[in-house]
Structures are given as structure tokens and as C-alpha cells.
Length: 418
Image (cartoon, rainbow, N blue to C red; front, side):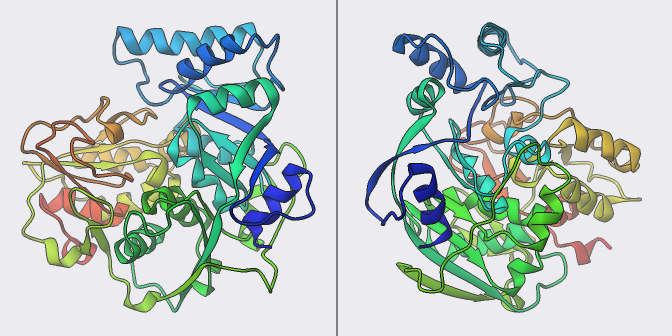
């Protein structure tokens, strides 16, 4: 079996599962945020369940419209707060202690290798970077799991993506996944498990791995996953709050598709409006003027991402016709960035350094685009109207390209700035 099939089999109490089978499986973590949890709470109440299946396995994280941007957002967050208090949830994270959910849970050692995780948010696939099976579900499925500790799945087919060769300077996980989505399309992995491997993956730090698995959903995948190794162990061991298990794919595992990529030929890559698959080399887009740059989100808001952007912009200024918003993904990352002097670098450059929030990624707040405006963002989606007005445009890039673009006021590569 593949690693995905093995994890599903174990959680279903089965010796083996096969692609296409419908199974019921026990979940390790159920996740919801301030947009999706209110729906799950209402559906949970309809079940008549007297209690949740495990108060230490349900994570409620208000991150999308927080700090609360308006009355409606405040009311939704209050629903999470009240439910968490009523059921004594151990994984409720209030503003000031929270973070962008898919950065927070790995950082806190809540999601671990070998876990089966569902979340009422499509980017729950992020945790595959740790060697877990994780996928997004609807709020009603999340509600049922909150009551029963189980969820149903159709076992996905697996495809293997092999990355070999040495990465070019500044090229990272964001470029690899954008290049891949550009090659296979937004439905190229539809309901499949995307298994990433190869020498380039083995040498990729955890931050880059999390970025790649985060965007598996942009190729239509059920989940993205990386077989855990030394890098995984070094990341997980000091964080883990319970036991975990490493699984790997069998040598005779079956894949519906196998693709290889020479990383030495992958350039700094930008996804142009209005699909993540509409990719081009960053150096070909130097004529595209921009109004806003956002560095952050569950895709690229980790400390390594903040450092990379700071390295580019240090001692320089944000272009006078451009605004730059930097959003660390968790409070810990925010604090570490302060201690390292990274926040000072951005503020002196004329950028905004914000408390953790998903805000601008979904056009919620803290960076909504007006009609005709263009943004370069380290986020994961650039659909029409994603960050604001339906006649605005979003270009997806890695933190180095985003920072260089902020300095130039147009899409730029680091070499133009350094």
C-alpha cells in the first residue's frame, strides 16, 4: 500500500484498503475555524449528542476574520468561544494565542505523523508534510466527527511526483508546487493523493514541505503527503505531545500516475490571474505593475518565509506606489520575528507588520483590493475576486519574489534588488 492507504487502513481497523473503497475511519483531530465552525456547531446540536467524542481532539481556531473585523465576525467567533467553554475543549485558541490554523497545529505539536486529520477548511491537506493523512471536509462531516470521532472516506488513488536535481537560488517549495500545478492543471490530481518524493524533497526544509502539501488542493487533490524522514523527526520530536508513527509506501505500491521534475530547470514561478495553474517564470512578468504585496498565510507565513522576505528588503524601501503587508502566521512566529529584528526591517522599509490573521488571503480584511488593483501574494489562491473586487488581480509567488516586487513596484526577481 501507499502511505496514504496505510494510514487509512490503520484508522479503519483494516489490514488493507484499496482505491475506490468507501470506508469509515477514526479521526485523530477535527479542525474548524471562525467561518466553518458555526455551521458545524449548529449541525452538531441537531445530532442530539450529549458530548463531543474527545475534548482534546477538537481544535477551534478563529483566524479568518480575526481580530474580529465587524459585528458579524464577532458573533461567529462568540459561537466558537461559547461552545469551547460549554464542552471544555482543550484546543480552543483565542486571539492573542491563536495563529493561522494550518501553521499553528504543526507548530504546537497537535498534528503528528501517522495521524488522520479532517478540517472544515480545504487547506487541511497541509499536514501531509508531516506524514499524516489530512484533508478538508464540509462542516456537516466535521460535526458528525465531533460527535462520533469518525468520518467516511473514499480511498483515493495515489500519484507519485518525483523531484530531482538541485534547486536554483531562491527557488523553494512554493515554486515547486506552482510549477507542478502549472504542468498538470487545477484538476490534474482530482481526488488523488499527491505523494511528493525525490532528492529535492529530502533536502527541502519543513517549511517548504508544508507549503507544497498546503497547495495540493489547488491541483484538485484529496491530500498531499510526504513520507516522513530525518527532517520530519527533527521538526516533530521537540513538539509532540503524544505518540506518533512513521509510515512509508511499500516498494510494490500502485500509483495511477508517476511524474518526474528536474528542479534545476524550475525557475522562480508566478501564478497569474485567475487560476493557480496559469504559471509563468517571474522574470517574464517585469512589466506587471502592482499595488499591494502580502507576505503571509497558511502557505508562506512561517518564520523561514518572513526571514526570506526580510533578507531581500533589508536596507531598502517599499516602492512609493505600492503597499506591503507582512503577516506572521502565529503568535510564536510573530514573537520570534520581533526578537530577530525582522519586524524592524519591514517597518523601516515602509511595510505593515500585522498580528496573525488569514484576513487578506480570502478578501476578508487587512488588505482587501479595490477595482483594478493588482497584488503579489504568498497566498494559495488567485481566483476572480479572491482578495477583493472581482476586477482586481492576484499573482501568487514565493516570499523572495514578493519582497523584490514590493521594492520595485512591479513583479521582480531578487537579483534585480540585491
